[in-house]
Length: 120
Image (cartoon, rainbow, N blue to C red; front, side, top):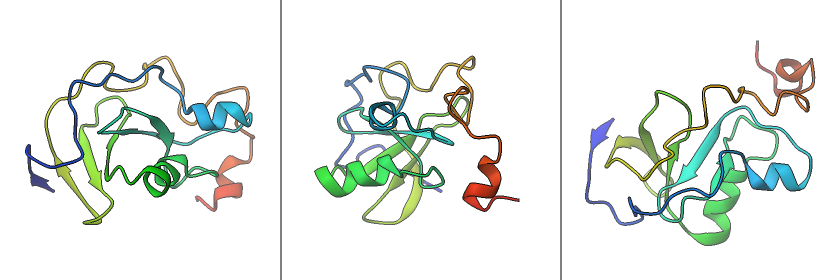
């Protein structure tokens, strides 16, 4: 990973309006991990998740950078460059709450979720 605080596509002042993937919520879906758009703070599910809403957000908006929205993780992902890097601290909250499970939401994650996703 590289350090880069001056990338286009990052607005550290914008705060997320929630701590779940609203696109999954709209379809009663579930996610494995969450990602946060570094420009508009939209929360989306990762590419391991069934619906891949973070990548869909990039495709729909062109917002080029996501940050992990998992507790203890502060890496960013650049879609155009296809690489991770470290950047500035974003507005709170910077992750889902520790009490919020991953995968989640707990009541919608199938018991065989690893089999569904092909994860050993």
